[in-house]
Length: 270
Image 1 (cartoon, rainbow, N blue to C red):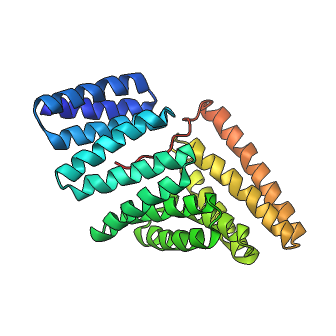
Image 2 (image 1 turned 120 degrees about the vertical axis):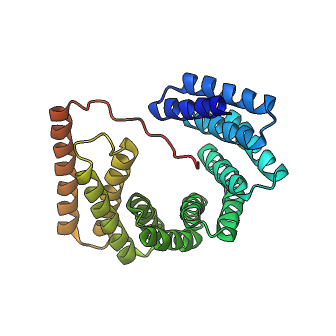
């Protein structure tokens, strides 16, 4: 059993480092040991891990097969925690494929289980996913509703990275539904939060490239919302702030020799 767990942990580590081939090799060995031992929980974990690696590699069809296996085992062993995890990961994978209607079905099931178990972190994740997917489907009022719920939980739990991402998404959904004043407010808050998180992680590699891209996108959206509201001076100030920040980042990168930031990877549900 320890050997299987060790393979799982090693696989997870390789996956985080972007060594996908090694990760797959470790997780497949974990899966085989779990099957030999008829340990369904361990088999479920290995399937989830493999699904996550294939998701990061962009091989979504293979990812779906493993997440489906995770779900099947969770249902057979009546394990709601793993069921929720599998629903969430299936939702994320269908979202990545652009199959948004299917994504919504799984994300709603993820939310339902999270609510039954009163798992607030899982609820935050599923509200956020549902908000993104409804935005992609142009159901902006529903997107706003889900993102507001997610925001309330993210604040309550002190999950600032989630809060920043949700405020960013909420700003875009409010903008799309024509509520420019409130969109402006959310995008300002998102930009400020990204700024704080970035400042704290300035000399470490923790500030992920995905967050950097979202922060840039927040500034750009805010600029356009301000122009639409006729606040041209403010829009110019925001544009300048975005440029200065990018330049400051470049200087820090040069000083610390961090030329290669970690690649963007969608987060899977553990």
